[in-house]
Image 1 (cartoon, one colour):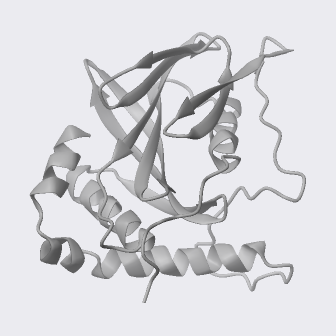
Image 2: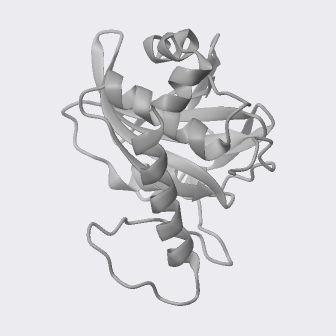
Length: 220
């Protein structure tokens, strides 16, 4: 992550704008698809249709079970945003943000919540595309998908990264918080079986966030 942030900071405005050409088109096109999906009129099927989790009028329940018992949850706050997590998850403050470690079904996991460099001179969509393009150039197996959080443009990332001596499969969520970007990374040690219930819980936790309005400039 530090390597990505340092790469971003070294870029001038012209360079930042120049590398958006491909990614901004993909992000905007995908967000148009999302808007169509949220519309009451069923969209026409398209190739490579994106699977989205979109809350209805009653929202999505944020629940997690361990050995058939529902785990009690609590609220933690980061940069003015409330996150709902199980009470038995260990939360520690770091220089970058919050590091949350926990064991679920005998598997160790991490959840990192931090801010990531952005430019208030660029619209939100451009910032999302720019960060993703840097990830794409830095991480070999990087993939991304456009989503909505609080009806604001956001991105879901997927890749593998080394943390200490352990390689983790990462699902990342990049979304706005007024004039900054928040990045949430959910990590499972590479090679461990995928816990779909846990991934669904983390995804729903992000989807259900209540975000303030974006202060990034609008798209022209």
